[in-house]
Image (cartoon, rainbow, N blue to C red; front, top):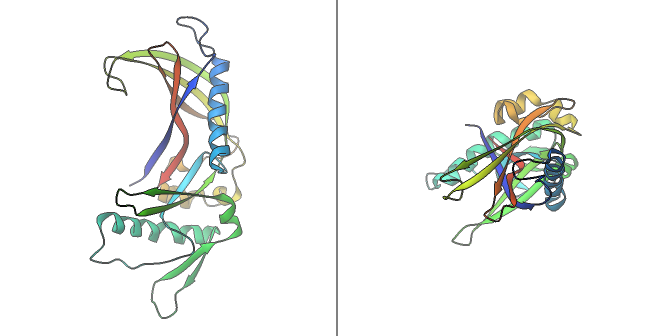
Length: 229
């Protein structure tokens, strides 16, 4: 099953209101661009679209499935059995057979893989560290804001009366690397059709802002997209 996780930010935004019901589209455009640019700077990633590999720390050697595996461990190993060979074929990982171990391989990053790698980790309640890795590409360039609409809900995202502002944008992706373009069909099979963003193509997207009780706007939108296999 293809999964698309949108990483959410909540950022206070100024200068977006022209009046009670009028919104400044150019300021929304600047706000969106700053959000997309900021995540690349803060996380030191190559773009706003990321292919998630799984919980893995390089160098890595395949670990066979076990009857003692937890549901999460089994799922992670099954994901790695699909993602690691693909990115070895693409050229972001090396893949060497393990001596005297049939169907087991040893993986490490190539120079190209190191360039596009994004590593992050989570701590479980028990204190166990889960190492995560993804390959990121495709900085977003906001072309224009096409529409701004407002709607009030009795129970919004916060669970109480809430006014949401939807901002429709058109964007393009710049600097899509050759390894994505040349392997787009393979990537789409594993990560879904929306996982590949090509250059010189305009894509639509909707951003979400929340109007606070103070009348100010707060941005709650995806700053980058983590595609799961």
